[in-house]
Length: 113
Length: 109
Image 1 (cartoon, one colour):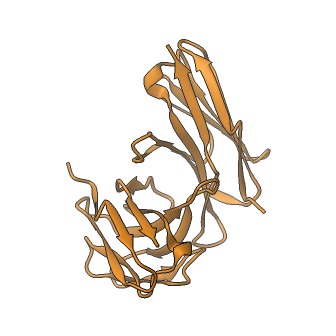
Image 2 (image 1 turned 90 degrees about the horizontal axis):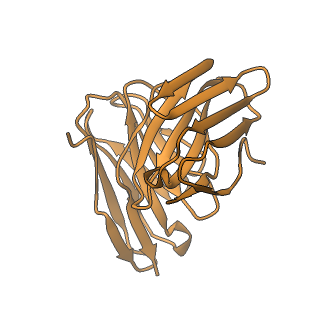
């Protein structure tokens, strides 16, 4: 049972570089989410996709873009990475929007120098 | 301003002890979630509840909607329960999901 798969698990970037974090789920879930987790702070929602074909901003969307490629996949792109984006990124999915248990990926640890 | 507050931030217990972690929230909610994050970083959903009480094995979660408070109890704690426990709420006024900063639990053999 794969659940939610995130790639890569670790990445180091230089300031100004771009990259895309990939997320895929095999549970036929409608809703998918991207969070970041920083020391001393709770998880914060970056973007979410309530259903295939829709995306919406969360609490901290600046500096990020997302694509809901299909029902399975939801990617997060950093166009021009900044040191403030150093964080652990989690992708999650749920059967429906928000009022369902969320299933999380293992996280991507991203460092920007 | 934190919409979700947890206490304590850190907790150390002896194996076998009864543990309580508290969560208070300030927004109207449609559901409250308890999550567990192990040292390796993975996050697992333990409970989702909107009223009353739920039990799964040695874990019990309760919620008091009027007081905007929830508790997570662990009976007969074990070292494998060592993890960070996170309280989160889904707002009833829009597409918002708020997380507490977590309670780091260490259970000593």
